Length: 254
View (cartoon, rainbow, N blue to C red):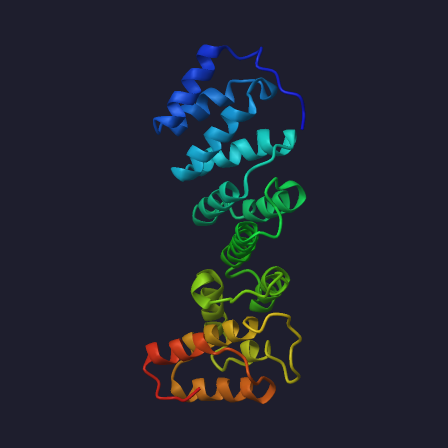
């Protein structure tokens, strides 16, 4: 970590920035921050401002601090704070940031390890990266590309945690876009392949199956999708598929 000095910023300015941030005036704190030389702002203040910006969903502050302070100065950021920042970036369309947050955590996360908490952070950062890619490329890339990103990030997670459709609304929406472009679902069904796709997590393919079932026009198409899937795959957890069929009112036994 680079050496940091406070000598270029007065204690009065620092106090004003801190109070503005803590009192919810994140925009005011950001305006003051922009006036300071980068190395004059101490790490404690930066972390406080980042936490407040994430709590108040002020994406402009998050983006500015990330590009102007965190990355150039290689500042470590706690994993849970990165998750909060990623969530804000996802919902406010700063869609390149989540992937950077994940890389930063993997490279220098101070709390990265094998504890349940660190595994939860890794899961969330990867999940938001997948969702950000799906959202940002909703109409510009094929579903196959979004599926590749999902497999790269989620299917490779240690411990093979359950992967549920409810945690990937943007990916589920992308399946709907693909289904709308190809009413016969030929492109979507091709993701399952005529030969079994090799995956590490038993929840990966059922998640895609549930996404397809959510967007099929009716029960006849749902039966076809299930038949195609069943030709290659047995014994996988179909909890989400069952829930989707029930919610759509289809009388089909999975």
